[in-house]
Length: 106
Length: 124
Image (cartoon, rainbow over all chains, first blue to last red; front, side, top):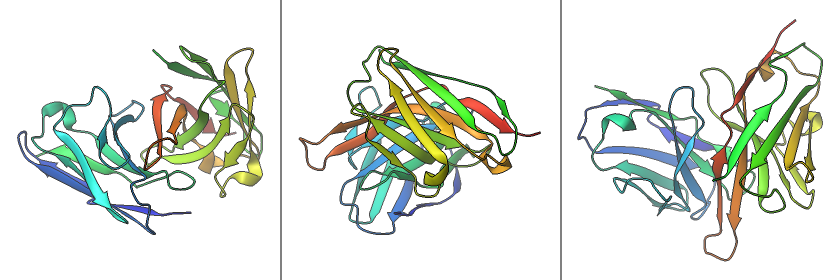
């Protein structure tokens, strides 16, 4: 299985901050990388698919980039509703998720 | 609007079989992949299995010996069975649609619709 490693595991940020979360795959997965947001007690919600494509209805402050094994989710200006846990997921082979990054209020 | 709803017992005894059903509305399960994902309390997400409308299945290798999935197209439902459960199988279990489009590059595969999740506790 392809292992996905996210960093950091958690971060504290303020409203308006630019936030970057990284995800590294144990082998090259080209652009087969998705990002999800999960709030407590809720199912994950798809934000970004195929590395950089924004899911319909997701605010444009979310963006994805990367290549090969290293990928990034960026929130350009953090809003109060963005405090949540974020997961990357590779779809190059059997789906696997990163361990999550919790974004907390500073 | 596609909606998914998990159903099944919330408590299962150790060594017994966990059985869940996902009912899909707003879309036919005669397309795409249909998947099970779980999340132990306070932990991350783990993909369990998916089943294609043709009946083709794919399982997480770490669970493969204990997992079975099936479809009931007449009811627009799909199901999960996990045998010989232990406390480590206590989790919120989600069903989800695994969308795919292999006409693009890179191909698109993602979980776009999820059920609300159901907590299954393994305890005597």
